[in-house]
Amino acid sequence: MRMAVQQSDMQTLIKDGRRTFVAGLTYAAALSGFITLLQLTVPLFMLQVHDRVINSRSYDTLAMLAILAGGGLLLYGILEFIRALTFQAMAGTLVRRLNLPTLEAALSASVAGGAVKASQVLRDLADLRTFLTSSAVVAPLEGMWCPIYLVVLFALHPYYGILAVVSAGILVALGLLSDMFTRQMTKEANQAHIENISRISGTLRHSEAIEAMGMLPALARRWRSDQVHAADLSNLANARGRGMHTTTRVLRLFMQIAALSLGASLVIDGTASPGSMIGATIVMSRLLAPFDSLTDNWKSWIAASSAWNRIRELLESHQSSRDSIPTPPCEGPLEVDGLIYVPPGRDLPVIKGIGFTVEPGTILGVVGPSAAGKSTLARLMVGAAKPTAGGIYLDGHNVYLWERGSFGHMTGYLPQSVSLLDGTIRENIARMREADPRLVIEAARLAGVHEMIGRLPLGYDTPVGDGRFTLSGGQKQRIALARAVYGRPRLLVLDEPNANLDAEGEAALMRAMRALRDDGTIVVVIAHRPAIMECADKLLVLQDGRIAQFGDRTSIVATLAPPRKRAGTGDAA
Ligand SMILES: Nc1ncnc2c1ncn2[C@@H]1O[C@H](COP(=O)(O)OP(=O)(O)OP(=O)(O)O)[C@@H](O)[C@H]1O
Image 1 (cartoon, rainbow, N blue to C red):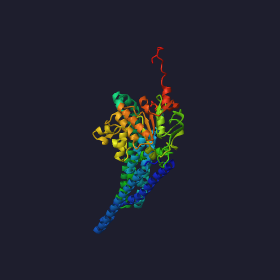
Image 2: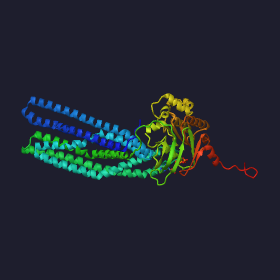
Image 3: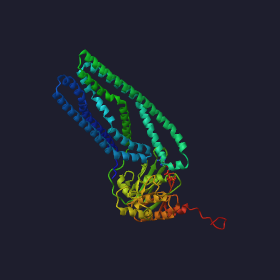
Image 4: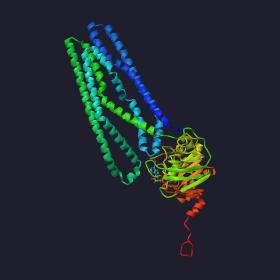
């Protein structure tokens, strides 16, 4: 069952998401402290072997040190594995919690016309998961325990410590400089790439028209300048990033040489032991290693934070005012009351204050010229669009506010542009639920499509969906009709249901409409072809978003019919 998520829930969800991340990061940071300590195992072992074992020539000391070092390394491996599992669990929890609300917000954004944003945010969620299980997320945690290495270096000799502080300071400054040079540009380049890909994939959905009419060169020219801009930004950001990365790496190597030289001179002066020289060099390389990949990791953090921001913004903007409690099925009339609809981003209304009532067991035909607002009215009737003022009520309940799961059980909708979902015919008719096959067959029979499905090689198990060519336009429309009448809805809204139908299909459609009407269903049908209106009980003539006429079909048809011209006056009869 699909539950509407309220705005306050969204805020809680975002807070929960942040809390999960911070809690996981804190736990992993604590583990990283121990891991950093245990990473000292090898340098300390070397120091001890050099200064104690070789001088004392004691096998016992060597064996004991080797056992201790082995234990330390084993513990190091276990803790690192636990840390990886921590991130995996955190990523899993975060994605599991966000998945459904994000999907719901994406669907709402898509219905409101923001399909591009919606599909990107679903990719963002997957990217966030990948980031949380990557090594980039660990890098700053290792960096924050660097002071442990500094303490060890100061303990070995103050000069080692001073060199380490200066080296780390220089590398941090370089990291900050690199961030300053690349952050904004990387962000812009990523955003430009995302927009390009979304635009291109949106256009490619019309691949047949593009192919048939040779539109690709013109489209490619349009895309080229955007792509060149995105590629330029990304190249520049990459070049800067690479330059800073190479500088950092070379400097780090210089610093290691400086550490070894310092160690050697301290040994020559007799102020440090050869073991401490080797140990200090290794600790120094461990200390400086995280700074090497600082810039690369930083980029991953920027990308992940942008992904999170897009998810957060979508969730925050998804202001669902719908009910979250299912409403029981009802039998009452459909009332449209003072309905006004202004599409998002437009100033003028498309539906301009209309009102009428349709009783159960009625077929209402909606007619009118193109762009009169018929399809918009259909979308408002099924709660796919939110009225700007007024409302549509079924048995007194506002259809927009209705909890979507229970509303869906009572409603059938055949949109103007039919699209079947990826799945089998059976799944499509059953609205992608696990359904009793008898109900699926009943819906198919009602829509007069059972025999046609039986003639397909895989019958009800035939795979269909966008991009598959298994079915003709008319067949798709009839299966979508079976999906709309599945479960014998109380409200059935059909937008141009006969656009692709032949005479047989149209007759089957009219039979289904009459059967449901006789069952007490309110059937609303929008059509340009007049034949289908023969089965309508009432007619609504919509013109420029206003009701031009509303009433019994027979009386309206009489007023619409052109006046009969009298014979014998030279006029045709
Ligand atoms: N989401 C929207 N954003 C912008 N304009 C919209 C939106 N929805 C509808 N419109 C506008 O509302 C008007 C009515 O559109 P609608 O699809 O309802 O007409 P119609 O009567 O069904 O036309 P047709 O018979 O040609 O299908 C059109 O001018 C359309 O551009």
